[in-house]
Length: 505
Image 1 (cartoon, rainbow, N blue to C red):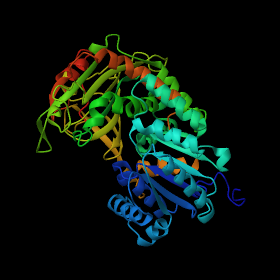
Image 2: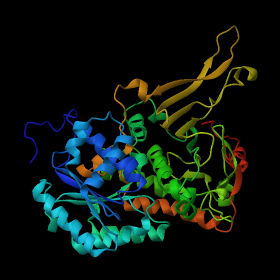
Image 3: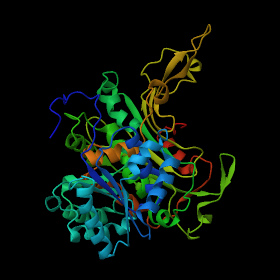
């Protein structure tokens, strides 16, 4: 029962979940240690978790509860965003449990089921539990079948809600994504499935909707009459690290284009929803994804790249083929650039250029909306040589914020114009630090808010965009580029053919 004294319109009071358990499969992995456990501590530190809250770890380890608690302590303290307070951890650590076993071990899942039932009485969690799949995608079906066999996914049997959180990549193509969707939706009810894309948990990504729909300044020019092109960049300065097995089987297009970057495109291009209800936002994003048009010639309108050895940040970087675990004849791309269109009235004729890559000069993710140049410039050509396109740049990471670039007169006796920038940064404008993406997303799962989670239709429609490109690339080799460069020369040539160039990120 809700608090009768609370006004639903009062947004000052925090949203706090009902008593529940968070079950983390693969709790010993990097994601759990660096993101999930610190996010749980930060939520507790901000007073956003209920007193009846349990973290239940599951992994192939012969640990007792105390060993798991120490591992969780070390992980949370090393990666927490908020100040460390021992009294907060002391409250949290008493609610940490561990069950060891393999994913195909029936006895281990039976024990997990019994443990959840015991916690219902000892910790007052009711029948509420969220299962977080911090595990390789290949293990999803095995774990889902175990949850179905034991009845742990059954809301009615458990007398509460049971939710599942699935990390990307969600499938490797349309066929596998549909099969996985069918399996997940068969085990859990549709509204209890949360497909997580951590980019949607970032404050700057959510600010795209605020920027567009809360201001009358931008929406009138957010269309093909005024916009020349849109560039979405996701650059990483790191290589593949220890992820060779995963990365060589996946590649950049499947790893980030199919999910993160197409979701960013959908938020930038979508129509205004009638409300911020999850179903309304998803409906508008899905319309955009369905309207995406691929290049008429995929080989002309896309570029794949693979990094060679070079220098990044003053340090020597080995080439992709020299990375540990990568086959010497691998044709997996570490860079992709593509030109997409959107076939609707708002965006007809506006190219959306998307690029992503590893071992680029620096780490940056941004969306740049480039506006058309003024139709008549009553200035001497020499006076406007340094004048480019008006630009609205949304920086997702790092240095989160928004930059507006426009032309201004240079002080002096002549009418010389130059681009200047108005720069808004989150860190300077707000006293409160932005929460980490996983904080927001874990809290939303526990509350049951699906706004920031793509549904099955969005996932499948994204594969409709990526699969034809993967098919066209099947027997091709990626273009080489040196580590520390902004990708292959062919990516610059792709834009140059249309009289454009990549924005310097």
